[in-house]
Length: 168
Image (cartoon, rainbow, N blue to C red; front, side, top):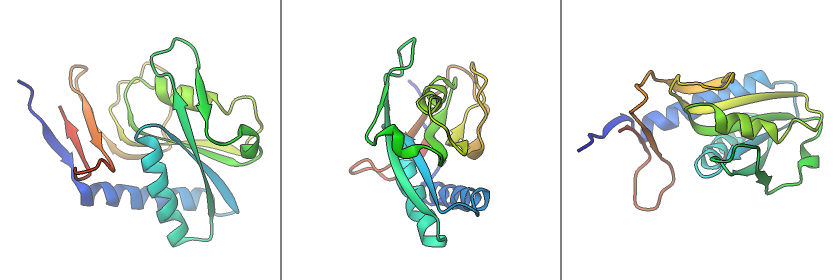
């Protein structure tokens, strides 16, 4: 039997989102528009919430892009809901819920390798510090050292469930 320990509640998650939104705004104070590229299924929910907060506190326009990846593939297989050409010469912020090995975030970044960008940043709600790929997170809600057998379960925007992050 596994135990489920709540490490972030709804209020704490919102505080992390608010702080990250301010950091993104500060990092891009000279920009008119940025792209938040959320990795489905929970990165895009996090990106939507960041967009809402960023636009409520500043003048920065935010374009949302949803990234759908085949996470278990040995090569990059991905698609976006917006033509990648719409992201040319913009600041790209790739958003995901949890950084485990780094593969998902690397694949998410890979989509933008063949277009010119101003800069590329990364956001994760929880960084587990188990990177197998040389990936850097620019904005992190919570860094948490876990053992490999432990799992982080993020509940965001799920019907009938309150937002929370659990250590399982």
